Amino acid sequence: MKEIARKVKFLNPVNVDKITVERDYYFPNAFVIDLPLDAPPDHAWQDIFEREWKMSRRLWERKIFVVGDKLRLVTTGNEIENKLNWIKKVVEQTNKEIDGYNQTFKVEKELCKQIPEEDVKECIERIRETLKEVLRTY
Image 1 (cartoon, rainbow, N blue to C red):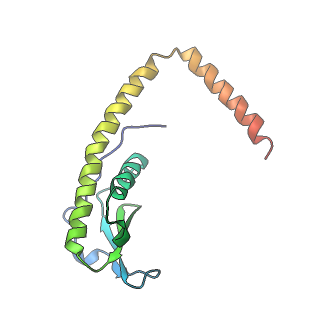
Image 2 (tube, rainbow, N blue to C red):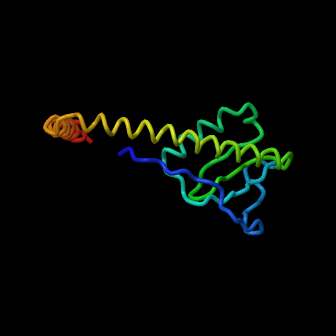
C-alpha cells in the first residue's frame, strides 16, 4: 500500500572511526564504504534514490546500494571527496523528489475517496477470486 514517504539524510553527527571502510572482495581495486543514514529508507525513497544515482554519467567508477540504514559505496580510492559530495547531492535531490512523490500521493488519496465503497469491495472480491483461480494451479 502506498504511503507518505520519509526523507532520509546522513547521520549527523557521525563518528568517522566507526564507518566501515574495507577492500571489496570482488573488485581488487575497489573499496566498500558504509555511510550511515539517520533511518532506514522506505521503498519509495530507495526507488527514487536509485533512479537519481543511475542518471550519473560516471557509473563505471562507483556503485551505491541501500543496505538497511546505510548507503554502501563501492568505488576505487580515487577522488573520494568528489564522490562523497556527489552522494550528498544525490541524497538532497532524492529528498526533493520525495516532496513531489508525497504531493502525488495526497492527490491520489483524495481521488480514491471519490470511489464508492461498494465499488471498492466488488473490485477486491474480483481480485480475490482471480487470485484463487490463478494460484490454485501451484
